[in-house]
Image (cartoon, rainbow, N blue to C red):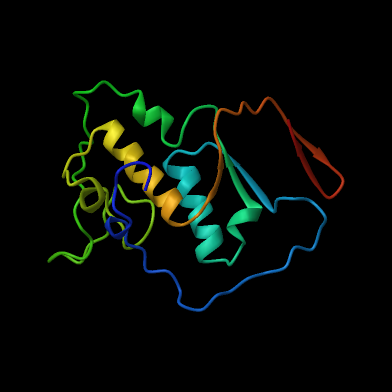
Length: 152
């Protein structure tokens, strides 16, 4: 992986069956998600894994990199809520996770990750699940039109 996190460090218990839906329109994307932070990456992952949308037809766009806002945190700033491996003795869901079966603690080996470490976790999730991401892109407008939206 290009972020230095081994692929096996990102666990995801996605459905084993491949549910894929064919597009019912000529547009290149079914969904465009503005923002490749925790909410954007988590939403894209669920749309693809749980609802069967093709990752090539779900686009994440961000003006910065994946997890950009977290990358801008001061170096000494950490998550208050601890990350823990959801497969551990508690069988609890990691509050800092964006996908079931994953944990920033497992990915970056830190119970209270820094912003940069959390961004590394998000990048690893996006890469491991082959999400379509376009960085360095400003979205200036979203306009409704007949049957959809135009994203500028």
